Length: 448
Image (cartoon, rainbow, N blue to C red; front, top):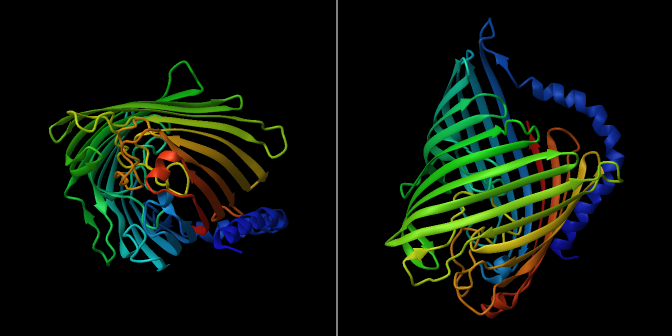
């Protein structure tokens, strides 16, 4: 049996085993919860004003990749074993001040060739910051400085990048006004952290600066509707697009409407970008939507979903305007775990269905055809760089992928999962040398 088939078979085994393990899981849950709770809010003073909470994660992930990015990326085949571990300490110094430290170790004992630094980072500081919270009459004001993760909205533009061994972090300052659990405004000025493969050698990227303001709140008078409004700014040296390489000074203004009611859920986002790319002006945009309905009373409580994205590309590589949308620091992988393409110069749809096979077992299947938004522009790979030989051409159709993902959470601290993705290139990608391929992965994550 080929490795992808093994991973898929293992995923189905998890679903079958879930029912048999459910009773044992329920019996063990109170004891497990008690054991991990002992690591939280440990009093360090007699009055309990100073406390320490410890946390961590251990994840093992096996990957089997055949012809990544439609065969236009290297290596042609890669079977990998990835192991990551986090260890954190949260020290609370009274009700207003805290310090947080989190270390990461990413190991790639099996990998075809030198692993990237997002997979191999032997030991480093993932997060380390101080935070001051000041209560006011209308909410709390939070001030934070140091190395930190950030994720806003639905993670389309700013995300922690969960799938690789090393999550994304930023060095800088952040402030927030927090009116409630659902209403807040954040402002920040940071540089992304460059992961490196050694020990405590990760550093700020001197070629990038990132700043912005992000607000979220329920919409007054419409209980089921919430809204985000944001501005994000980016300076990036030697940015690469199909139009060329130059310094990029880009501004993004966007909004998101989301919520759920009566079985329906929705998440719609639109953004406009402007600025300069070398001597060219930037004029780019995106519109994305996710819609679903859950049949809660049916067997397996199926959720039928439909996702769609239109993300601008550059219609003329030789004029004085860059039309390619930059997704900034998005969640990756974006469309599936196969990480076929970045969200730039793209039109796609993704009908999907999610089944709750057991209370803690979910299966999701989706189909995702892909087109270029602008024929003149290129296909953009996972690193948001143009894939060679894909700019121009007569057609827009890039290909399609079918994905299956199964996750089982036998306890609050343990998650087991697997995914399989098969993809076929369209005529335009075949002309560039593209071929069909597949990706499979299985993982086990223990968090505390």
